[in-house]
Image (cartoon, rainbow, N blue to C red; front, side):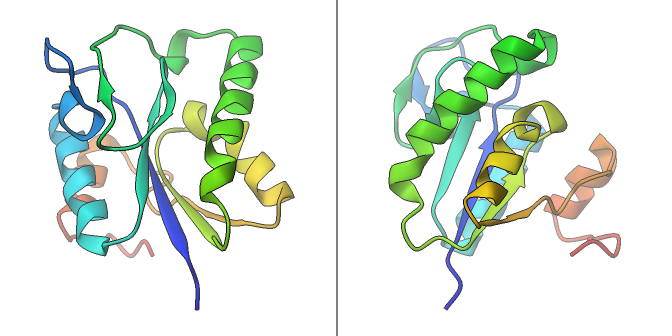
Length: 143
């Protein structure tokens, strides 16, 4: 049996008050991504530029930070931190599915492959509008 977990990236649109990670991010993309991963019934986590890896129920404060503006050195450190946070959740896992942009995957995905895990990026190469459609069921031939 194949065991899969999902990693969903944070977004800039957030509620103004502390909330569970699954509720803090309020962009249409995040809401659709959350609905998609919830429907799988599989475990998932939020990749946060500030907090690293967050369980969806973890209470987090709003923040303004993104990997998109971070220097390479800081992004490598962020990926190392996330990998440490993720390791306890990888027992028995075969596939890690990224619902996240390149900056959130660039150092983390190769490290996961190094540990023998398959990495999947189902929306890789899709523009935002296409991702929103993919998340609502129009798959554009992407699997």
